[in-house]
Length: 97
Image 1 (cartoon, one colour):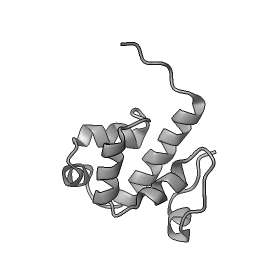
Image 2: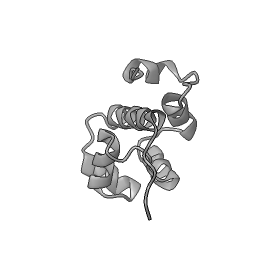
Image 3: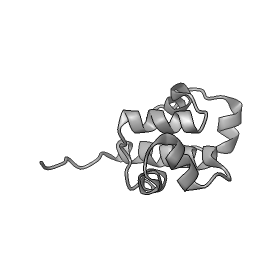
Image 4: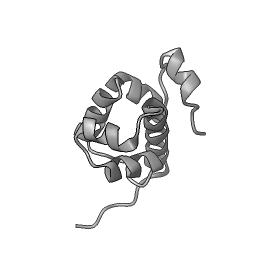
């Protein structure tokens, strides 16, 4: 099966997701967060660095739970047209323009 190339918007959304997850992880190790979410550290590394800009919904949901993020917060920070996010997240993760 051949994958269609990602659009610039999809790449940007992946970069935003990676930045949000890195900020939410804080001082916690990548391995600890990945284990808590039930994914591999390599998968988390790929998402955080933008090498996996379109992770599966259940992967994002598991990471949200492990990092105490709501899916609404993730959507608000990563959508093509960002919606208002809590001030704590706006200060922690700048939008990538």
